[in-house]
Amino acid sequence: MKKVVIGLSGGVDSSVAAYLLKEQGYDVIGLFMKNWHDDSVTISEECPWLEDSNDALIVAEKLGIPFQTVDLSVEYKERIVDYMFREYEMGRTPNPDVLCNREIKFDVFLKIAMQLGADYVATGHYCRKGTLHNVDGTETYQLLAGKDGNKDQSYFLCQLSQEQLSKTLFPIGELTKPEVRSIAAKMNLITADKKDSQGLCFIGKVRLPEFLQQQLKPKTGKIVEVPAEFDIYNRAVPSFSNKEMELEFFAEKPAYTLNDGKVVGEHQGAHYFTKGQRKGLHVGGTKEPLFVIDTDVKENVIYTGQGKSHPGLYRRTLFVNEKEIHWVRQDLALKIDEKLEIKARIRYRQELQEATLYKVNGGMYVDFKEMQSAITEGQFVAWYLEDELIGSGVIS
View 1: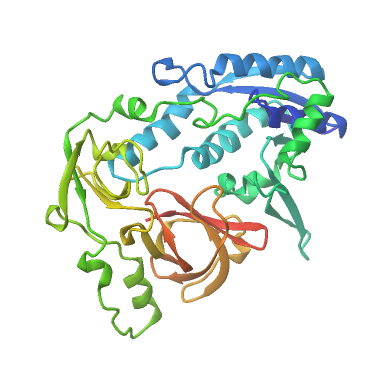
View 2: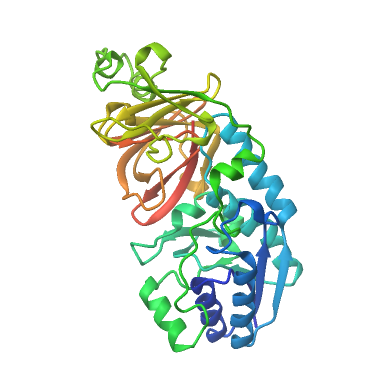
């Protein structure tokens, strides 16, 4: 009998995943990961880890599977929290959920599972795994979108490797969320009607400003409103001698200065804000709401524009540095001067967008057919062929 260690988070998805594995004849062990000790910045009513841990234990007892809690808070701090602080300090916006999957669930957690003699780890993600049988007898694993279009979570797993996929099972990938809740209700699982967690990966809901203020000191700076008619948005498009020059031109983001608009307010630290953000600016008196179009953490200035359609929010092309390109399907990796038509997304739940990858010396351009709103440095772009996620990268 194959042994599977499942990450039981105390939510309905991992609960049903554990039940399905048991039904399929696996020897199942439930493991709850404790990743956080500091309750001062968590909104405890929303998603306290203690309640989640208890729910996970009750589910394990109901299913008759062994249950353990592992404390990964040291690894979580080193690999996720410290990284997040560094990224915010540089004015980039990290995605902790993608990192948590790569660094914690499918690395530290996977190694613990293997030490327990497991053949596989499993999670409650809405995605699927495919297997291609190669002529030389080896196997290539596919990361496929979940069947539930509203809940597909393949984006969060965009940094997984072939090695990690080879040891992973996604039991609920073929199901929709209502089907999962229905199974949980039928089995009288305590998590059947539990709300989905909205917080940082496995640590509950965190107040981001307070969380960041633990290390990043508040400092007052200016909020500048840049008019939609600003010259840089209407710059003439030159003729290009090659495709790479054209891509470089469209990937370049405007460099703003204080003189490019008018000061409309103050903030407590540019590193607390991200591109596309509307809440938290506390500036009134504008016809349309202000959106963050850029942050300058060096000068501590936030640049904003009025309305969702402000041209400062939009770009067609982005760049990924060589060292931050990741291919789930290494057999499909592009060589210099090769291109590939794909579909891509730059955030979770975004509809897949038509785009072309262009591999150049030093990295890769992702050139979208349509303009994209709030392309944000530090976030992940993931690219797909049909319903298969084949690679990803950190936006430069």
